[in-house]
Image (cartoon, rainbow, N blue to C red; front, side):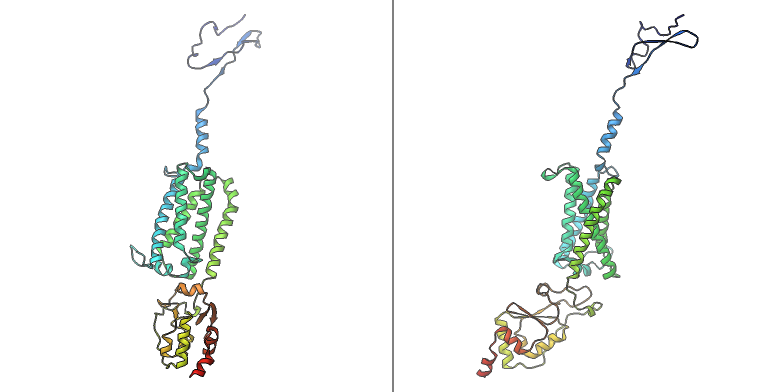
Length: 365
């Protein structure tokens, strides 16, 4: 006996809620010899929009951020704060002004006026201003998908990562300098700049996957090592005078010339002045004083003497730019007709190098 429990001639009661595909009906015999009607039903569902939405979210994960703000916007914001801070420090450096401290205290002025505040003669805050400005512009353009020179997002992210890595490496090196060379000094602006650099690096790399980070770590180490090598080379070639005075505070003072000038020293001093000869010295240098004593009181006033520490000598003092440009290695240093002569010189040597006819002068007397 055939048992039919579906009437195929009438619509299925659930046909309006599900789309069904009805394949050919199969009849099989059960264990009791009865024929049973088997209906194979296959539901045709709509494409899973949730999956597509998840894929879109994953593909744009590099631009996602925290607190509802994109990573690129965070980079632009932090970079903008750093740009304003370094702009202010650049102004202080170029105008030799004192920094403003809301809570009082601080040693930023001493640090800004030290040899460590410049890299190959370029003010360090100016370099920081350029770096923060670059990060700010990159963050804005990446957030707006408006990169220059037809640059794609991957290249833009790579430049942003390289910039923040270099900045963080420089900040780490400066923190080391602060702790070793400026022990006991405090500078809230320096610490703020370091915090911004490390925050920018964390913000940039946090959206990279583990595999991407492993691929980039070699590049980051190379960039960090290059930055440290450049800074070390710059500071190792800087002029520090003298080491024995590193811990004292020596205000500028003048010395009195007690000897009388002779006709020879007066004539030689006038000749040295006429040929543009210069003597580079320091107010505390005993050899510089002895060199002036050779000429006497009146003749010494005719010499072109360049003071290398016009503001006094104290911890972290910077040698005057005119002296640094010459490459001073000791005092006194003479520059006569393009020739650099170091140390205290005899009058005969000064006459010979400058072209002063000593014999003619002696014969004329």
